Amino acid sequence: MSAVAEQTQVAPRLLADRINALEESSTLAMTKMARELAAQGHRVISLSVGEPDFKTPAHICEAAKKAIDDGFHGYSPVAGYPDLRKAIADKLKRDNNIDWKPENIVVSTGAKHSLANVIQVLINPGDEVVIFAPYWVSYSEMVKLAEGKSVIVNGAFDNDFKVTAAQLEAAITPRTRIVMYASPNNPTGAVYSEKELREIAAVIEKHEDVYVLADEIYEYINFTDEGHFSIGSIPALKDRVITVNGVAKGYAMTGWRIGFTAAAKWIADGVEKLQGQVTSGTNSIAQKAATAAFNGPMEPSIEMTKAYARRRDLVVGLLREIPGFKVNMPQGAFYAFPDVSYYFGKSDGTTQINDSDDFSNWLLNNSYVSTVAGSGFGAPDCIRISTAAADEALVEAVQRIKDAVATLK
Ligand SMILES: Cc1ncc(COP(=O)(O)O)c(C=O)c1O
Image (cartoon, rainbow, N blue to C red; front, side, top):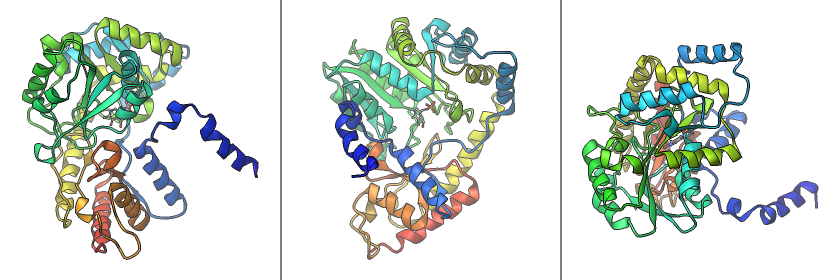
């Protein structure tokens, strides 16, 4: 047996159980496959990745260059530089009506890291985390890593994929510790209104050991007239809402890796303690860039959001012309999330499509359009299509999808 084959056989046995139990991120897996096909020379249109196709605004890049020149090269405080924590506290007051001091804020390596930290800090083995589905692929895996139990509550297509207060009430048990959701939502683009969140808050208020983990990473990419509402602004729940946000989506800064947790002091202290043993303070230059983002002009973000809204209209309009596709109208973020289950059980004569994984793989291999199966998001009838791409690429991608499904019988 070759050394490589031997290594491959040994690996699963010696990997820790918690890693063997973990699913690979389906969005990253799809993006990797798309890159491989592109490297083989295929004209792949990649609509699987969840990232803006814009560049980080210039004033933010300038702040990073200045940070390098000014010598911010050393370790930063574990919870982040004081000026960044202050900029975040100001942002929360200004945009979200949430009144936290800098000491309530911990800066981490992206909102993903912030979410994973909070779950590690609050969840004991067997504790339940209610997750509003469709949900971002990593939520359930983060809960698994903490040995918690995910309780998935499905938002109905007819309610724009949103979970109701009554559904939440029915899901809460004495073991529930966290209720977790994203608004605007990845993958559906659904936005919870103030009314809906107040109803949800009223349910949570009755259960004093239940906390809310509000993922607001798409806050600025919101197409509604009402705009964003933060559940953390409701006074009765203030100490029980953990707000997570960052710079990735709204400022086109996915690679800079800055996210934050804003929470009651004992939770923020717990996150800082964990981070102090695992990663320390995050990248010093990126923190200076994020400070400039939170303190700076919003015009670039507003312009990007206008572009996402226009592309949403374009893509949803075209997808709705495809026979059998059921498409909701996203109110934020940059994804379309069509229900493609009409095609399950159909075949192109060679390959039978049985579920959204088959559908998404088949599309990639036949039309060279990469999407992500809804199964990883807890919505096995759907596929996720990123609309963060140039108009021409989006039009061509949807045309390729339309031509491809026409061959399914
Ligand atoms: C709903 C949701 N939360 C959090 C994140 C992670 O954001 P970050 O890049 O800041 O880690 C993403 C990224 O795709 C997301 O879609």
